[in-house]
Length: 55
Image 1 (cartoon, rainbow, N blue to C red):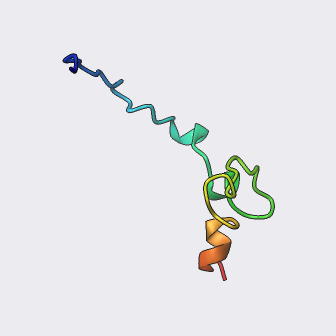
Image 2: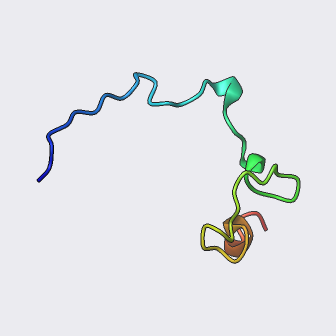
């Protein structure tokens, strides 16, 4: 069976302050830091490029 448990979340919901927040180019774009491996996540390329959002 299952054991009853409780979960406690930090008050900040683990969100960083504005000055430490990521920008779009941290994950997307040719100059991005490439924080994500889009192919390993199941995409053939960066989803922004596939959807054409920044045409």
